Every structure is written in structure tokens, then in C-alpha cells.
Image 1 (cartoon, rainbow, N blue to C red):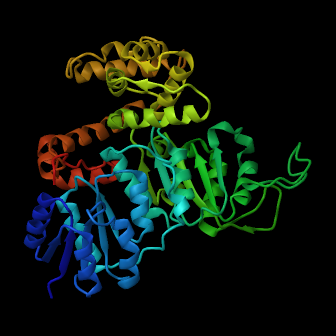
Image 2 (image 1 turned 60 degrees about the vertical axis):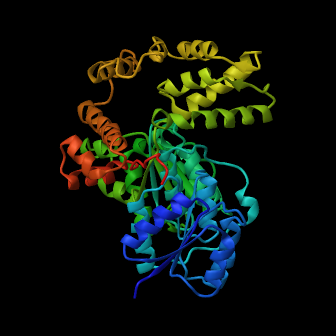
Image 3 (image 1 turned 45 degrees about the horizontal axis):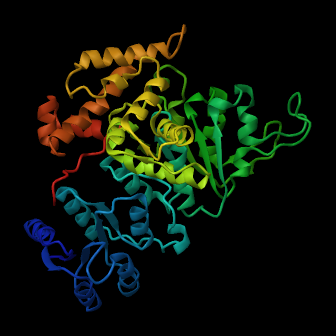
Length: 483
């Protein structure tokens, strides 16, 4: 029996596109421009799946969703929205939507989601309290961030272990905290520990606690981070810096669900969600014998790669406004960045990512009396931030630097950051791995997400490209043209 898809969107062009695409895919399609008609169909028992825009002339889909889930709890609802924020994705999940797609959307992906929903209907969890929907823990509407939002929305009501990778300053702890605050463990504690900031011989005690007299200086029993995080989330930052002995003990906890304190004998059951993060290439660390492969696969259940700020430069104006609002709450004078200043910031490479951007905005708010921050001020600050800063190249037309020159410039800056020392070994493979991601992303962007064309452009087999997209966590580009 042919499934019937109910489509609601006030944009006539989108209705036409969806009608044609879904009809070609073999579905019966009914289209409407308003929520009232959609609800009439649903309440009459019509339709096997709903595709709806959030904003419609007569009612918001998020207000309609609870009625739909109450009347027909097994009816999958796919929500589309041009308001592509973290909270939109979370709200769609909380209200009971089967899935959420930001506009503009990929028709192939939409049809695949519909097929999956019809073959394996899912019951989504009840919504959270309304007061949980205030605020914006993650900022940005770029395509790269949309993928982050969608993954997080799907993980909110699970306890799956998450491995967050990304450069320093991309917001790994912020993502972990958002996952906790909007997930089912939100009433439990969120405990973070940075492996790189703890002396290596104290990491096991920090994680698991110790008994009185367990080692020199242990004058009292001490609780560890696992015990402190009981019933909540334990965020293990810079997991790549964990010594081997601690890795072995952590693996045992993940396998058996219990641990013993340092110097203790009685096993302690644990109930925590683990979220790990690193800015290192753990596969390279495995090859070098510095990280356990079995622990890697235990932690890497759901991989999430956070993009560097330079790959989501279109989010910079939103981030700047967000940091200005934060600064105002802390007593800093209100500022506004003019268009040219924002363009300079969008063109800058941001080696320190979002953390560096936040610091620059706060510094400009604190040090400059002008109400409007102009281009010259931003250039001056960024030039002062990094010796021999590439800000002088901001105004260069695209393509002025060859790939070879860009790599040489990057390597020079990278080596100089270690002073008289040398970077860690394995540099060749690390560089090639880091170049692979932006190369594949650029090819997919240029071909508007067409993997066949991208594979041909790169000279790769299509299956090889798909494998690399999956392994590297590349966010497949969605065309910015109207759907």
C-alpha cells in the first residue's frame, strides 16, 4: 500500500518541489499552506507521515506538535525550519518530532529520512520543561553547526558515549555541557576533568578517589570524579594526555561498570555518562603506542568533530553579538562592530578559534571608548595578537597564495609555536590527515554536495569518498539555493 505524506509549508515553491520529489519517490502527497488544514487531515486519521515547516501563517508547528503526538503518537513528523539554531533542533526533539532538517535542505536526505521513518517509526521522548528552552548555549547557523545541532538533538535522551574532537578553543566543553543540560541526566551533576592539567601520578586518584594512607600525603579519604559525577555526566577533556595505566583502569570501568578507589578493595558501581574530548589525532597516538586502541573504540561510540572557526566564518557576526551581550551583563560598555570590522574578523584564520574570538571581543569592549569598533581597530588588535600576523593578508584576493605557500606559512607558524623544541613525532601523517578534511569539504561545497561529482573532481572512487566522509566526520554541504 502506498504511503501518504502530508506536507505543510506556506512557501509555494517548496510545496511544489516536495510534491514533485515525493511523488517521483512513489508516495501519495497532500499539500497545504496552513496548520489548520494539516491538523484537520491528521485528526481525521489521514496520512502516514508529516513534513511541516515551523512557521506558518496561522500556527507554529511547535505548538501543533504536542496535539499531534497526543492524538497520533506513532505518526512521524519531520520538521523543517529556516531558523537554524541549536534551540530549534532541541525544541523539535523535545516536542516529539521524528527529525529536524534546516532549510535549505537536501532532497535526497529528506527522502531517505522519510523512508527510514516509515519503515522504523520511532517514539520520541516527552518534551522538557519550557524553562529549559530559554537561552542559547551554542551559537551559529552555519551548515557545519547544523550538523552538530542535529547530532546533539538525537543524543539528548540516550546515554551513548560521545567523543568530541576539534582544535583547541572550538567549544568542546560547551558542547558537552549542552548535551548534559538538555539531556535526561540534566538533574545530575556535570563534572569536568582536564587530563592535561593534572600531574600524571595523580590522575587515577583524581578519577577514582583514594583511601586514607593510600600513598604519601593521603591523610584523608578523597572522592574521585566518578563518584562526584554519579547520576550525571563525566567530561574527560584532553583524553589523549591520559597515561597508559589510567587508560587501562578507565577501560575496565567502561567494561564492567565499576571501579575501586586507589588503595581500596571494594568495587563501587558507577552510573555516569562519559563524554570525552581531544584535540589530538588519537589514531596517530594509537600507532605510536600512546593510546589504547580498545579504549578508543569504547569512547568513540558517537564521534563528533567540531569545526574550527575559520570553517564557519559566517557565524562570526552572531558570535560577536553573543559575546557583546555577555560583556554587557558583566558591566562592560556596549559596543557595535561595523560591517568592515566584521569582514576583517571573518577573513582572519583564528588559530585560537572561538575562545580567541571571545577574548578579542572582550578586550575591544574594555579598552576602546568608541561606541562603534571600526576595521582599523580590529586589524590593530589582531596584528598585535600574533607575531608576524597573517592579518596583513586579509585584504588579499582569494587565490593570491598558492597551496604550497599556504602550507609553508602554516608550518612556519606551527614550528615557531614550539620555540626551541620540536613538535611531537608523526608530523607527516598528521599534516596529510588534516589536509584531507578541508580538501574533501571544499570539493563537496563546490559540487553542492553531489558526491558523484565530488569523487570525480577528487579522482576518488565514490565508495572511497563515502568512507572518508564517514571517517573524517565531514559535514556534507547543502546548497544555499532555495529548495
